[in-house]
Amino acid sequence: MEITGAIILGSADRASGAAFAAIDPATGQKIGPDFHEAGAADVADAAALADEAFAAFGESDLDTRARFLEAIAEEIANIGDALIERAIRESGLPRARLEGERERGERLEPLLRAAIHRLGAGFDTCVDHRLSQRCVDAGRRPR
Image 1 (cartoon, helix red, strand yellow):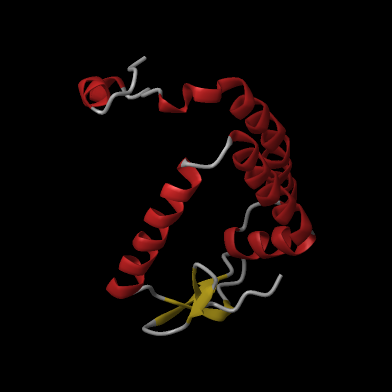
Image 2 (cartoon, helix red, strand yellow; image 1 turned 120 degrees about the vertical axis):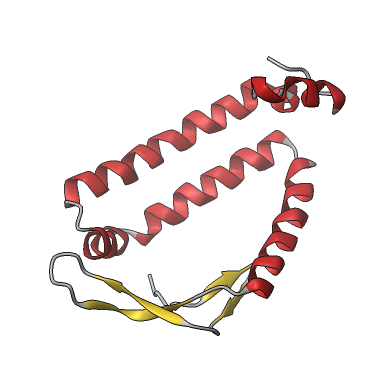
């Protein structure tokens, strides 16, 4: 896992604007590389990409959605111990806690996949009770 400090937008890396360093809480030492702050243009570009992805993902079939979750879990697992080592340095949390978090995520993926297949068309269900009228107005069924 290579950390460059760049902002990742879609498939592009950007490294501009002010930068800051992560700090190892155990030593107070800076951990490189420096990370670059996102500016207004970066945020606008990220929002536009998210909007595009939301539309495409929303039209995808359930199996595609489930495979997407599997790919995320697989990529996290592929990072291996480097993820845990970096998280220890940045957070000061113990290895067992961080490994437990990673394992919980790995166990969650098959459950999410099963839920996606079981729910089927239930993705149009609105769960936020405070917005139930807005759900009805949008043609979704409040729960």
